[in-house]
Amino acid sequence: MNPLVALACVPPLLAAAAAAQAQGVSLAGSMGSKAVLVIDGQPATLAVGETARGVRLLRLDAGEAQVERGGVTSTLRLGAAPTALAGSARGAAAAASEIVIPVGPGGHFVTSGSINDRPVRFMVDTGATMVALSRAEADRIGLDLGGAQRGTSQTAGGTVPVLALTLGRIRIGEVEVSNVQAIVVPGELPNVLLGNSFLQRFQMRRENDLMRLEPRR
Image 1 (tube, rainbow, N blue to C red):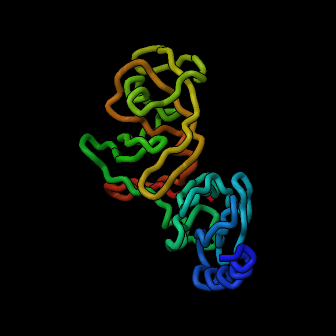
Image 2 (image 1 turned 60 degrees about the vertical axis):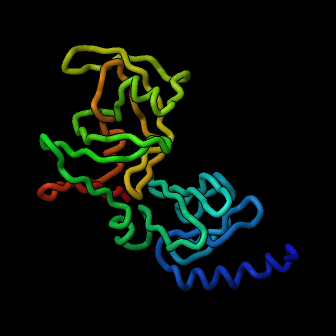
Image 3 (image 1 turned 135 degrees about the vertical axis):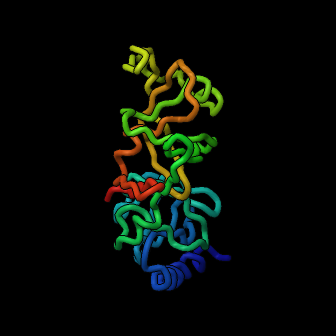
């Protein structure tokens, strides 16, 4: 198709998408290196790193785009239904982005998720300042510790040396959070501890045997 004809077709397509998708964020197409998004019913064309109506484009690949809004990251796919993120026009956004974790053995809230797209098991630990994982787990998921800062942390067993770094992204269910502070400890941990560097981005509430994490807006 002639590029000028293709560009001429974009406005009516966006108008239709905006009318049909008045809530949340969706990927309507791309124009060169820019993503064409529909944000709460309004079209926006963004290059990687640009922001519109609180939504920042992090990555654009063939048929999908990664965006961030209100500290929550999500991957949008071309033609998929709108994704509700923190900061969307109505409260339904928070519900759609909510993390629900059932209680497990011993009364701990344990769930599957990923760090930088590598699968891990998380355990909610409100007493931990930061997300914490063992050196063995860090090696298993391929974390680059070359730029990590050396420090110490106080544990029940005393002071231990740690490596501090920023995790690119943590994903649980449909919710993804970017740039989360974490520490790597030398001892063994049965799960990755989901500490307050992650939890502080959410409103937490317990309902019987469920822990609900709703993104702050």
